[in-house]
Image (tube, rainbow, N blue to C red; front, top):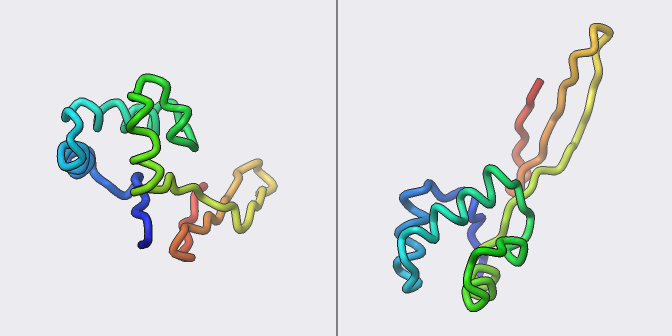
Length: 94
């Protein structure tokens, strides 16, 4: 089974998944904050979640990360990054 990247879920989709797992809907907000405000890279770092939930999250999801494929710095100091996604597609940021 291929695990879904939890970052690919919208807040509403995450809420539905949590409820399907028997969790209250507010768990989705907790997880969303950990991923997007605190930028954690592991479910075990989400210290306000029930300990029983962490293995379930690890069983069903991954937390996707970006890989820096290229980093360029222009003469004016502008930095450009080419990020590789899990699906091997790329996104450029400046």
